[in-house]
Amino acid sequence: MSRSLWLVEALAADPGAAAPPAEGAQRADVVIVGGGFTGLWTALHLKEREPDLDVVIVEADICGGGASGRNGGFVLSWWPKLETLIEMFGEAEGLRLAWASDEAVKDVGAFCDANGIDAHYTRAGWLWVATAQAQDGAWEGSVKTCEAHGIDAFERLTPEQIRARSGSPVTIGGVLEPNAATVQPGLLARGLRRAALERGVRIHEGSPMVALDRGAPPVVRTPRSAITAEAVVIATNAWAARIRELRRLIVPLGSDIAATEPIPERLAEIGWTGGEAISDSHLMVNYYRTTRDGRIAWGKGGGRLTPAGRVNDFLVDRRHTALAAERMRTIYPMLADVPIAAEWSGWVDRSVTGLPVFGRLKGGGRVVYGIGFSGNGVGPTHLGGRILASLARGLDDEWATCGLVSDRHAKFPPEPARFAGSLAVREAVARKERADDAGRSPDRVSRWLAGFAPSGYFKISEPD
Ligand SMILES: Cc1cc2nc3c(=O)[nH]c(=O)nc-3n(C[C@H](O)[C@H](O)[C@H](O)COP(=O)(O)OP(=O)(O)OC[C@H]3O[C@@H](n4cnc5c(N)ncnc54)[C@H](O)[C@@H]3O)c2cc1C
Image 1 (tube, protein in one colour):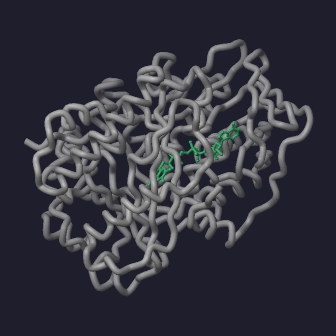
Image 2 (cartoon, protein in one colour):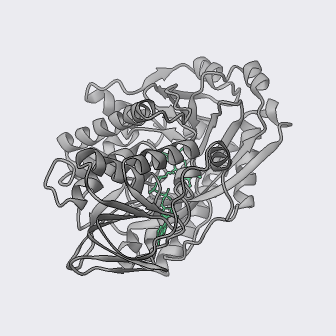
């Protein structure tokens, strides 16, 4: 098991109260499987609505050990996905969900303020940029969809403004989403854990669910306990692919980050001091931001693939962290000498549409799930937690009935086609994006195959 720089820093600052493994036969109102942002927000929403509810979290590792303590820390809305939301759910519901995601960005900050969580929450906006001609205007579809609905989520910046704000001479255009924020995700995950413990949530770390009885009532089994509950919430990100029924809803995909030494004076020299989160318009997205102590954390999507169900614990994928570092040096050539101080990798649960999927598992008992955040979960898991809290309580409210809840989600092909297909598409995307970066035209086969890639953070518009 390798830990991210974020989690190492957070644990050094405060290891937190003990959360010993689950033991013996127990009962609870709700058992949540997975102690990342999805599980923790679900627990917090449940307790906010019903403070006396008995809520248990079982976490295989430690809270924040998964993607929640490893991500880039971009707190983003779904405005870049508005077109997809409207296509899928109609105008009113698409807009409602996009607004809810926009609120979630603010809610994360407000929760931190109200609970004394210093997760370095900084609302300095998100720059969606192009670093090669082929990417230029990738945002236009999203920006125009927002404008058509009278929503000024994005600000168009001139190439000079983008270069000045990002400090990169290679960046050729882009837009700003001012409402977006960044966090130090390890501090956020551990802060939410503390807030959950303070509200009486029982947390058991080192407690993997090894079996799930779906009868009424359902039972979650860990190596040394059996917990019977009114409802079970599956919040296990890419590991949900181990559950047969959920397997085809997601592709587990690695994402990798390289972080530099602190270089605040070098950042000041190039003018990247505003704290903006930045991503380019690649499908294998480069996402980068600065930290409070003046590092650059550079992430790259589209990393490791694995056959369905075989999601293991994390080793650093050095081939992909090296690609991240290399890209940083291309986009910031004047920082080519800056050493990389930390590298880590994690699993993303890519869904077919790039939006999370919620629903109920078949069986007599109430077992609900929320997975598929597709590399954009730091903000949206706050909203996902609301949906899961409603589903777990069997409610029929605006969250339990929202468009993202269904028993007929789009599926990837079955194995072995899925793994073989994912590998072929990923390699084609890589070839196409290498050609784009070099200003060459990609070969037709790579272009065609790359068209099968599921969308990630945002729906990319083809340049006119
Ligand atoms: C490198 C990387 C960069 C990313 N960057 C961003 C970003 O900048 N912005 C953004 O919005 N999103 C980003 N994401 C995605 C974001 O981190 C996730 O969408 C979000 O953290 C998902 O939260 P989660 O709780 O669903 O998953 P996780 O945090 O992975 O939590 C799932 C938990 O379930 C536990 N678990 C698994 N199996 C079991 C079991 N059988 N029993 C008990 N527990 C189990 C795991 O140990 C894990 O702790 C990134 C992800 C990665 C990996």
